[in-house]
Image 1 (cartoon, helix red, strand yellow):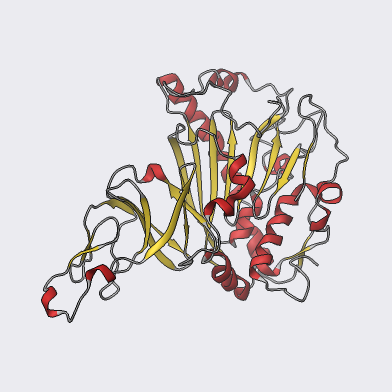
Image 2 (cartoon, one colour):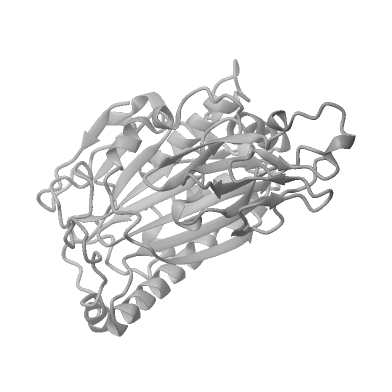
Length: 418
């Protein structure tokens, strides 16, 4: 898809630009069907054709820093875990013993350099090889080298761990991320190791939750108290997106920051103590962004809002990055996880500043998540058949198109749109 960028060097914007009409007309402008958010059949196909077949972000390398460290995930009904081997490589395995199928790891996270089944005591090393079998001589011609743990395709990008449940993925992680992965590389994700995290089970479809965080059209209403005047102003009163980039699977945009915004006195004072890169970092404060993210270093840049297909949003800006991940549980149930990452504090003043930023972020996320269950409850009646999207919601339109390209529910009968 093509890329269009308005000028960010000066705080002027082409408010007449229409991303759908002028830049990505192939996406269309019609309404989008509600059915994918309430249909059991559509949900089942998403699980089979997306979540069991594409690369999914499952965690960070910091979760498994040492040999034997592991964490477990439930992905599309499959129990898997990821462990750092003695050789330093992070590997994924189906959480099932090669003997009678019991679980290998029982905790969400832990450390074990000898993975032992609690049922009959079969043991495996952190590379997945079967190492010990009690009363082995009673098995007829047991070849331990053929009964290791079942591997899950696993790879990393910029410290993010990805997994693919397909035994032989159709494309590599590098190919899957494509231009998006290249553009969003070279950011100090790992240096921003101070993390605030939140998790909630929401009674809504995963796409309803994803959509709520995928546009700035709602900011002036939902966040009118949390961010008055910060993301809109005289030059851009309705928070129009200065830039949109759509890729084969993924998507990104710049969220506008009002350069004329003046924070309240307390907030301005707190911001003076924001954390900075650790000693030994090759970057200085304000130099974190990759070259092609806000390349003019405009004051009208708030953050880069990006979507990694299918279910994670990654946002980067100066001094922090954050993610929203949406794990489908049922057609109307989703696990949402939000994580805010910042440079570690060096003193009490910086710690206080981090806590203040965390509270502000938490409150905004509460405002966002507060809309989702009501949306699902209303849509569940089946009365409304279509979403009517405006131009600034183009990331949502792109997301539904890519999802339908994989699912094929309307194949031969139009797309996810009208």
